[in-house]
Image 1 (cartoon, helix red, strand yellow):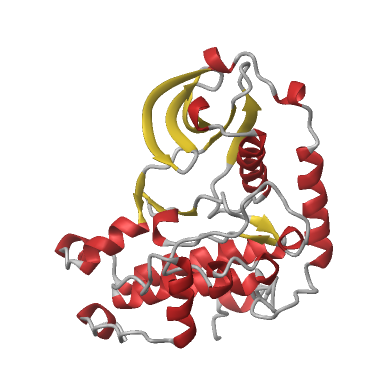
Image 2: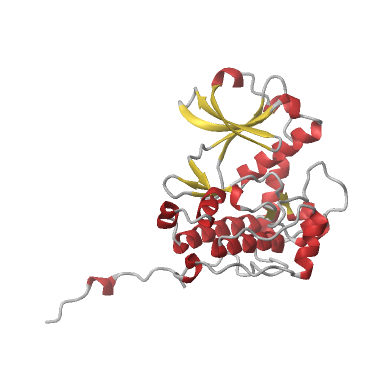
Length: 305
């Protein structure tokens, strides 16, 4: 008698649902309702009063341990939360860097937007508040590892240990994780607008996080004609799309982030940063005319194809 195979009785795994089948299209109708609900929730949090945000115990609750880095208007500290007894990262604005109330609103907008994007490859935000002197801060998961920028820099210079650890397959897996994070943000109607290796953190255990949503905006906001206090057009030469280089706020769309993902993929495959000019207008001209020097073929790119 033929023995039955246990696998014959197993229920076949369900087909993976494609949440956003029109990722590369101009209009995403599938997630219209989700985008509206997301934006309504985000706008409701922005109406919270200053009094409700103020935490008079912040000075005693969080014990600063060491400064991690400075970037833009933010300073990132490693702190100890005395309530939970865990180590966190805290982002804050140094008082001397606050030029106006718009700076505070921009800082809080980044924190709230990131907090609403709950995805495995987007940094979780734990708390958003104002110190008793009015300076804003937010706390988040403390990441230990290194940026993709540092990894690609070593690969460009043929560091043997890095080449052994970060194969092309591994790097492409990191890239796909980033695509998942951006895809998720797009279903919420959010644009990152500053995707680059320096904003990708690889944890000690392989965790992948897309960081720094300081330039991020909602798609509906990027198409508004009225001025907003937040800087929604900016980016990094070499990675930003032509519409960013020209400062065309109304032209920002999902394809803007996709362009930056492609620039990042170019660097992963060639070990060479994308060509760029220091001046944004010159950068746009370079992209528009496509006068690129072809990348040098590397063993990294040829040995895994």
